[in-house]
Figure 1 (cartoon, one colour):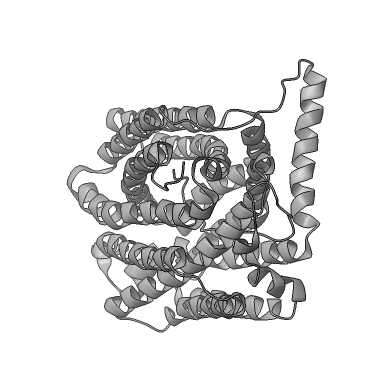
Figure 2: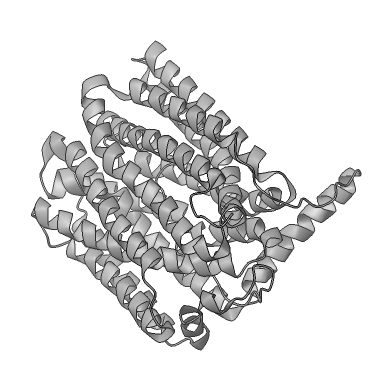
Length: 443
């Protein structure tokens, strides 16, 4: 298994790519239907917050589950369940097209259940990748995974906006369900080498082991000062970035005065952002920087990304907004790959699932609050979005700048994963990633 694109990684990659294409189409349909039907920031924020809260509560438990059970089975079964959920949602929209209250309830119900299922999927995928590719190919594997996600966004989001105008939401929901099932079929042929812990028979012993694993993952993270600082700043940055992303539809329609064409421009802008992310991921996967230079570059990019959010408060030209979206994607993509690679390379296989699950919970804990609060503020301020964007930008700059005064945070950024000699010769001192917060559950 010396190649990056070995059979197992290729099957996983192609399955996820197709599923992600369907998911991007679905997200556009979901977003457009909610806004066109309710024009409510509170409604959009609430449905997003509920899905996010479910993922946060379940994150650590699902990480432990991924370490103690077959990751392949988790990946395949969760894709099948998500496919069934999306097909059922599409059927509900077909058979009850005019029963708006029922359809809104169906969206809440499906979004929540999909979040539960996806909470098991995420840690299993993150923990499995280092087991199916060589250790020295981890940066490339992370880059390819993120490139897959963003290529699907580049194609899927503009396509979704056009298909929504032609066919409406139900067809797009059904398409997403089919792509989940295709992904499950592709993943069924993967072999993931994983040493499972010995089975225990007594239910009390199962519960005790589960609690022990969960506590171990949280302690592993929290006992390292550099890691703890990074998690705190990640949660804070995620809070404000989530607010900016959630309010983008209202910014396009009410601030840039794009009218009903906002959905098309939303698709284009998010595609441009994805192109920028691919550039960032590719640079991170192909190039290596000296430790000190990399640290300076990462902090600089985080600060510039925050400034770009603030620039939206003053820009009224959609093409300039497109340029800002590209730069933001590139900056964020480079940062994410670098930090994710350090986390994967310095965490033992038996701990990865619970560590990723706990991290997702800690870092994402603020996201549902941001979603609900930003939706409420948008309605309260009569969709006057620029002041909200400016406040978010200033807060992000201050948070990032303040972390430079913490030595442990700086030491984390200069860590070099090339210093590691062997996958099992690991000193778990410092770690992990600034993740992207999704408005709805995605594959």
